Image 1 (cartoon, rainbow, N blue to C red):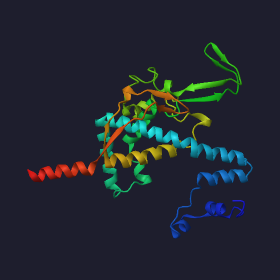
Image 2: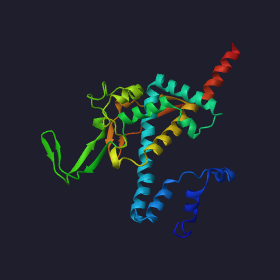
Image 3: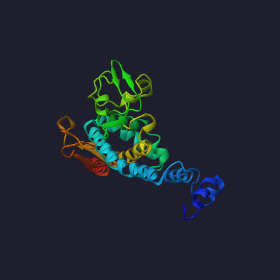
Image 4: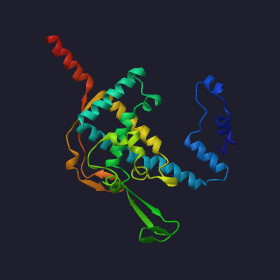
Length: 265
């Protein structure tokens, strides 16, 4: 940006819809890095601040998302009825979008969205976070003095029976709109919450949706290892002590076999 005197950034901000259509690109919104550079030029962020945000997005968002996908696929493999509902929703949406996975398609998968949320409830990759208390806080009979580092155990919050009846059960309908409205807003915090929540939350969910959509559309999932036998490792992230194996069966092969048997009859 400095080398070009901000010309490209300026063009992105000033470009109109008609101009964007003329060159076949969409310039109405700035990318995250463009916004960070703009904030840096206005003196709102240092180069170090920009680098830390990019590091968070690229590195903190890599392993967390992949582990979330692994746990959710394992859950879908074990719950065939849920998997089939997800597949029906995806297949219907794919037909409406000519078989293409687009941003619009990913935003039209409410049941898959609920499955992802329930998967992140049971197995939040960032199972614990720390915060430094800025001022004295009274918690019932306990005083937490300013400067104290507080550990927030997200895994435990997500399985608290006060908020989640039968907390060990995988039930995507926990995230129906009417149930969300009656639940404490901080009973579900896979991406933290408040002013210091995860900056990549929406991007991470879209990544998971895109990957799971593609896999469920093309494969039947069957469990090899079961989550009840899983030994969890409380590492930097929540991860299995041993790999979770899931069997992927190509749908087109199953369909071809079915057609072949029908022809024989």
